[in-house]
View 1 (tube, rainbow, N blue to C red):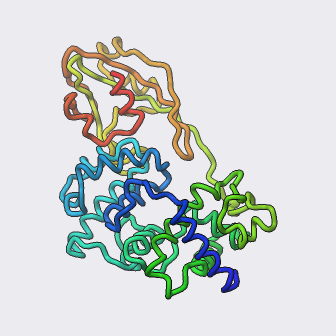
View 2: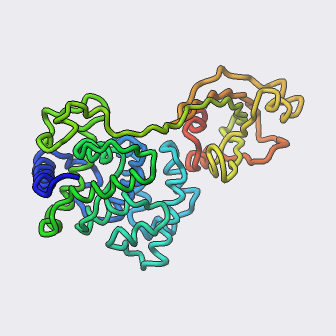
View 3: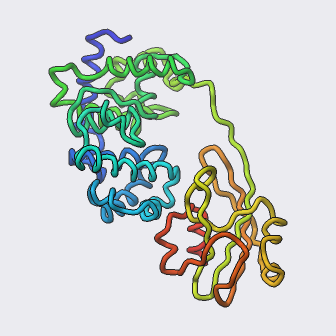
Length: 350
């Protein structure tokens, strides 16, 4: 654990650095609107800032506040989310908006403990909203901040173990600004923790010479910052081959099916999916089978899985009955549906 003086020095240095050198031009900044902060925090989970910016703008244009999001349909929410991945985030976002309207009169709770009880808002996201919008003195601990805290504290506990993760939360709380400074400094401090992890305290080759808290960082003093954080259990990558039926008419209609609520692309509209080429061909009438054109496979990379996607293209003069679950969707309608990113790409290519 850090000494009190070191902790105070850390918070002071970080706040000063953030105000001078931190990020101030992100589209969700410059406001203490909890709706915008919440939306950005959910979108930024496992997604790069550059990717999120465009989605954030489109989402706000359609759903400018929590009440409009609560009134929207899940299909429309998924459509706007299409391409961001991790679609459970979008479903929880919609459920959370409805809960805020129904249980809290459309007003975000102002404390992290209550926020964390809402759908899809974990402990760190709740703390970010409470600290950035309401100046609550509470620590965040997302992936970037974990890296900062473990390095500053020299914490070598294995974060694959729940007890060590709990200990890290305690250490993160020890670094917070003192109670007297909380109201004035919590927003800058919290943003500073995120900025430091994103801009300087990177996983590889951290820029310690530019770091405002290098003087109180144990890992920097020991010369081993890249050894932190420690996590022994890592998910193994897997590989999966899927065969997609891309049936379209000359008018641009597409045959789509809604995926099951569990598994890959859960709940999204999608091209019919088959385990292999034989199953794909067997599902078609004989005449359609002869017209099927199998395209070269392409790779779609998920976080822990490589998808090898094979597409069977079937161009028909008009919407014909296919003995498959699903429906024909017009060229005007399918772009607004929640579609997996590779499926949307295929359909856009025509």
